[in-house]
Length: 233
Image (tube, rainbow, N blue to C red; front, side, top):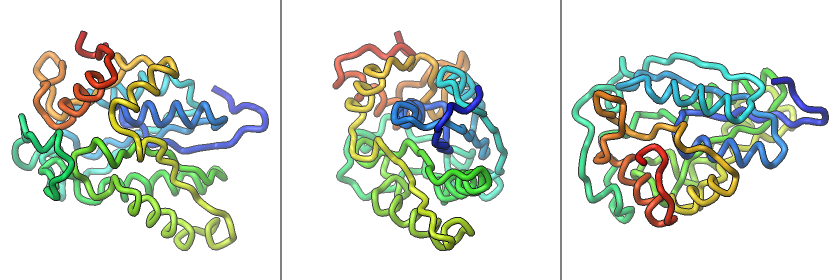
């Protein structure tokens, strides 16, 4: 896709999941031309990368870039193969706990946003889009409003564009939305959630396990929105 006339560029982190798809669609609706970045960081499976390609195509992004950063070599997360992915945790639906689950990947969002920032600066973009959520989430520290604000401050002093007076903005349109609100917004935008993938540890036929934190939060969102999940049905 070629950029539109009078366009604004935004680099969006596109994982292939429900949240990043919705965040990207919101940015597109606000008039941004999307430059999608998908990072293979050593996840247990590559299904979400296939989903990201489908989502990028459906969004009509200007370009979709894929990168590899081997965070699995550091360990420290069930998502990169260290330990088992937690299943059937009540904590997945209880955000009052301070527990950070085993699926937290050390510094993942900081690394991914830094890559997005580098690309954005190189193409003259000052907007980064990420689908983090601070209400219905698994307890990750890099999904909170204070983290987003801190990264914006970092971008202002860590880049040539920033010290030159340009303001980088990390757009996190889902930050204050619960999963049901996200699902409703995506359906309002006409998104096909059947293209997405959310499960941390899918079954052999690539279907969602239905038991990990991500599956439970996704199911909770669709149930509270009163809508069927096309990935399941």
